[in-house]
Length: 188
Image 1 (cartoon, one colour):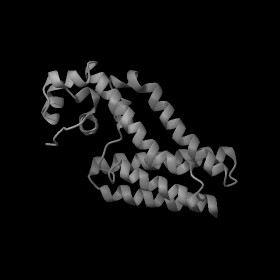
Image 2 (cartoon, one colour):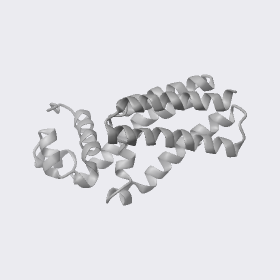
Image 3 (cartoon, one colour):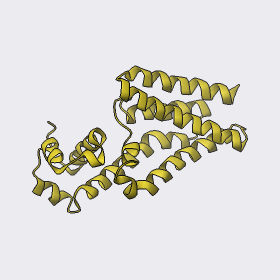
Image 4 (cartoon, rainbow, N blue to C red):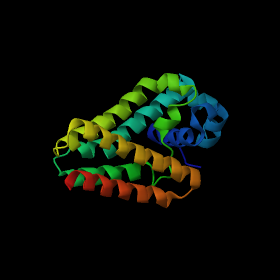
């Protein structure tokens, strides 16, 4: 068990718990057992209960995703480097395909109503960021939109496949494939 010594440690552990059990599957008993904190301590840090914990987790993953995945797309690097850095960030963010997509986990069940707008906006922002850098390479808008969607679908689909089969190397292969495919489609 991870020793919780700070608020950051607690939110990191909550992230792992929500990734593993989903929002609906995460009970206060599971939270207490996996953090080593009693219910009173959990409510001390999160008076709003499980929903407030989920919000803290969502804010954390948003910051992490922005830093690791979106920020590389906004640099002055050339196109292949931006894509390569984004894919490296995705690999870190998803722990080589071993970590569930929390945006997906939060998009189902009772959290769908809580996070629906934020999740939609996050997905569209990622897509729009890709569209922009693809268009900057001289690709027309419609083709840039399709390529952006293909990139995201390939990555997220590979994540689901890797988690379902336990073949985490398939996630790495899929990321390499995305790099090859997108570079070929744009730079050739």
